[in-house]
Length: 103
Image (tube, rainbow, N blue to C red; front, top):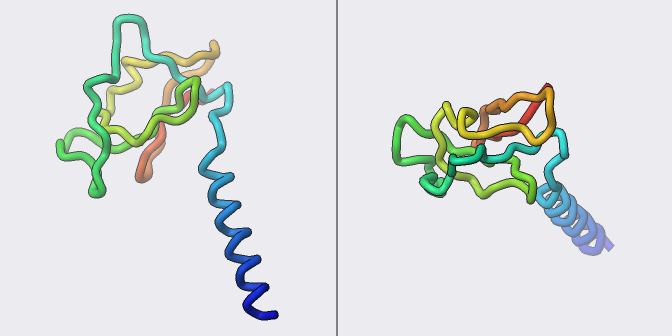
């Protein structure tokens, strides 16, 4: 009986974690790469962050979902625009950080 309860709790925790990680991007948070700009030069983050000390690890909230964690500079918002008007690009601290649009 106790083992059965533990398995149920474990399954619930795993499903909750997967559901949280699989959440899409809210339409108000979507950023797009400006015409003529690119993020193709951004490397993927390593286990310890980015090799360049002037870069940080962040997920970019794109139309199709979150990008994998990539190394970006703090001026990344200059290359991006918000999909919805009257919003601005912002960088949220963390590991990985988040680049998305806010009011």
